[in-house]
Length: 231
Image (cartoon, rainbow, N blue to C red):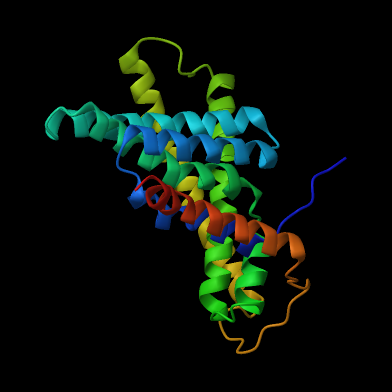
């Protein structure tokens, strides 16, 4: 049985709202309670555990690096450093869990139809997000093509660094070419001169969107409520 899909605006709001609650986290105990509750809530939402764990691993690495720098340059106070680490985790975990559910095309429809944002920035941002999703696929294609020609990344660290730099340059050139082709195609279809847009799909706001938005509000309020309760 598939899980219900949420609207992109509610997912985006639920990803950003924890930023209002994260500044209230200043101690280890406070942060552990809030992050623990957040992880329990995330268990209900996660679909693909492998990709989610990879994203959370990058988040944890960034948070630990910030905690280490806070410990080194902030008086070597372990409680303060742990609080900073947990504060970053509380801020970023919802985005790491929820943003993969946001479809760029649906997000563009909702931004234009529900928030009535200007059409040109919405179309441009939607196209950019769609291209961003394709970068991983392009990188894999470049790597396969290089391996087929016998110039893979096997070898020492210096060789791997040179190959990675060469692949990054190829990816940049490929992206620039595809961006030029996309801009010409969009201009040929009237995206540059049209003053009124029509939409192929509706942008409904459903009860489940209200539910996840309220969940985001609760996550934003949780650290502040903890401070009030434990004061």
